[in-house]
Length: 610
Ligand code: GCB
Image (cartoon, rainbow, N blue to C red; front, top):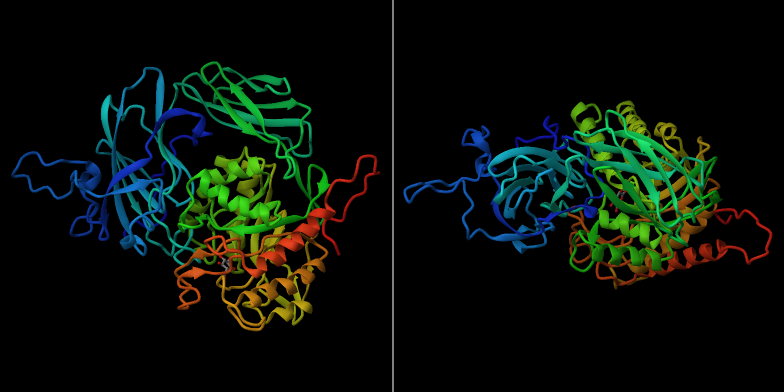
């Protein structure tokens, strides 16, 4: 409760270790002992002062039989699995919001000449981390990785990690206290100890240069004492490589010509890429594709593309908990493929890395987003710093993923100068970190006359692609309203309809005018599609949403029961009528996009049939 946003001491002492799954080390997944601490009494004393030494984090054990120590983990403390949200592991935690302390031990034999990092895939929302009773630091933000260098703090033999995870919502947080999703708490993603050489390849950016199909450009950064080294970037399959010298900061840019098969949804070709320094080397699987916005069109590898998308929450079907594995990701992305998608909007926060890695393999383009959602504190510098850090962590983690084409700054934020300045600064930061991808945000609609939605949000000036959420037929009139609504824009930029839809539990039937029925929901889509076809600047769509998801704001008994039921599939994978409406439409678009038969003279397809 006292730990509000804007904590000064952040986790990253250096940049995040790139591609941690390619690094040796020790997985710290598995059972961790826990203490539930709703009053944060393990951290604050009875007058609400932080307890010197970190309270439970100090990891003390009773010294003798008279010791009345309360701030300790006893061996019989219950356990939770990591990775995993706590809400779905024990029924009594389903609604819990607050602090849970986690502890686990690990044995380690230190090796000379190596450095160690304690790395967390994500902890929602705020984590304070202790190793062997000493505080390492803290991290705020529930969906991005963070790490601490622990080279000197790890000891030979048994070590203990204690983490205070607090998922209380805050008005000054990112996201803020009001969202439309479940606030899953805990160590929700992998935890590991990463072991790297003294001077190691901390990060690398290997992507096609902007505007090129056969020229890779990027940079590499070493961290450690031997900053000046020769580094080779090699693509064994094509035989291409280049060698560069890193500077006194361990940094070097490079460019490399190569004849490449471009990555695309139809052919998600990935190459082994090796980065070889004198003291370290690492391998990744990277695809190469060119994404561009020109006028009101989006093109992939130089060809116009219509983005047949769907929005997805990071919630696993069947067990309804946070996604943390490739198996979870495969269910969701397979369903998106079967729907006919070439694109997914991973709303409303960075999803598990398993999602973007698998999207690379399966051939799905990705919209990736930070949780700047609804009304955050636009005038609060700490909120901005928090958002910018989460943006940096998202881009750093996934900047080598071919699937990711859009970085989204925000969702449905209210108009105002402070908000536009905040989001404009985020967009500038995103471009600085990654000049190759397109910047977007999902904006709200407004009518310039009763039948015209005007796309004129001033935020548009900072975006490459305008995202637009509209709920004609649900929050905005009846489905037939879509028959007469038209869209106009002041921007010579592409628009993606980033949300639309309606709500119905699977199996609830009635006529198409009866709300909360599958028939009504399908009717929303039937009227939306012709409207969308009439929008000349529409370059894609991601209706809301692939699968029903848990939501505390959705309380209609017998209908919602704390689920947002706008899914085209239920959380058990049952397909609603609207699913087939959208699938049929996407199939018809996909057929139009088939490559012409060999020998046919090339024609440029209009990306969206009108
Ligand atoms: C929206 C939000 C999304 C909600 C959805 C709804 O506009 O962006 O997070 O879940 O509407 O169902 O109302």
